[in-house]
Image 1 (cartoon, rainbow, N blue to C red):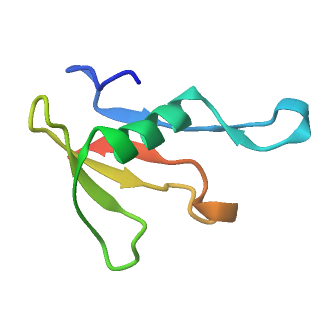
Image 2: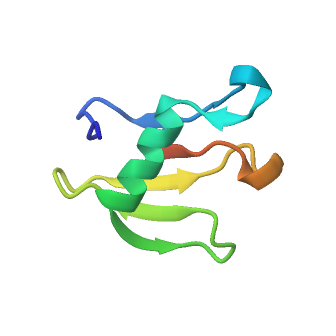
Image 3: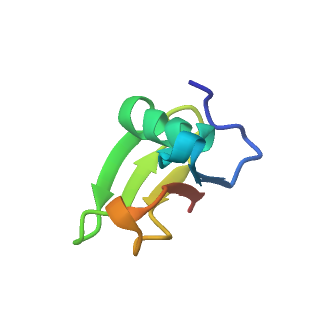
Length: 82
């Protein structure tokens, strides 16, 4: 898993369609890996969709959001520096 670089302020996942199937791209998988195994979880909003994380290496806070939430399954995720 590639950790978050000091110059990064947003990581945005996208859907891709290989062989007619909807799957997440590399950024999508990276976000999920960071959220599930590296970043420290601080909490989430009432809906449960937006989650606040902290990067243990530099203390920066990141929000996991789903900017295309109208899509099936909430759409691809984004990690945004707070």
